[in-house]
Amino acid sequence: MTDPRRYAPSAARNRDPILAILRGVLPASGLVLEIASGTGEHIAHFARALPGLDWQPSDRDDGLFASIVAHGVDLADGNFLPPMCLDAAATDWPVARVDAIVCINMIHIAPWPACEGLMRGAGRVLPPDGVLFLYGPYKLDGRHTAESNAAFDQSLRSRNPEWGVRDLGEVTALAACHGLALAGTVAMPANNFSVVFRKS
Ligand SMILES: C[S@@+](CC[C@H](N)C(=O)[O-])C[C@H]1O[C@@H](n2cnc3c(N)ncnc32)[C@H](O)[C@@H]1O
Image 1 (cartoon, rainbow, N blue to C red):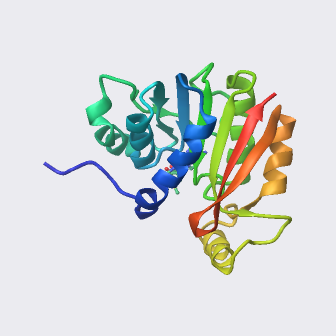
Image 2 (tube, rainbow, N blue to C red):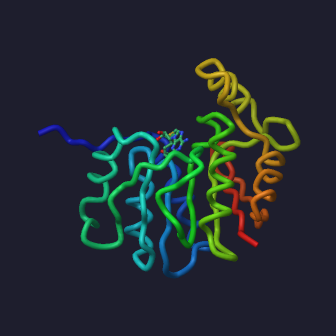
């Protein structure tokens, strides 16, 4: 039988550096929603490492669900919930309340309305002090932080003119409109950033 698990090469490299940040910002217990789970590698890794939390995978593309389920199959009776179809850009999400949200490598590989929807939804479903964690490349003050990010931005825009590396200031301003204050940024390997917002 074919193995349904898919792999993104970057996930194996960045999952532990991301986990190290998550350990410092997530609550000890509660429900964590991952938006844009992709292959499911990240959330299965985090669910194994942080068993006090319940982990809800999601993606807009339900063709990824078999991979997500397969990556978390050893956790299926525990803290790893079945994936749900969630389009970040949608005005309605299939969840009413979560304790934290994690979104890795989505907002630059989706049109800007996905980021708008992410902030709107996070502002609605997070409790006071709830964390929205983002990971990916960002421009700072309108400038790329590395040549490789500028080249990546070009390649994204050539694939879809609505995609592209976002400016951290613009993302932060949008977040503030939904009651999410920037709580910290951490420079990560390969010219990426972890960005933490907290609901006021
Ligand atoms: C580059 S992949 C990142 C996957 C995974 N987070 C990772 O870092 O390996 C981008 C993911 O975003 C998802 N995506 C794109 N637009 C979305 C949207 N509006 N809502 C939810 N997921 C979306 C895609 O289906 C894809 O799984």
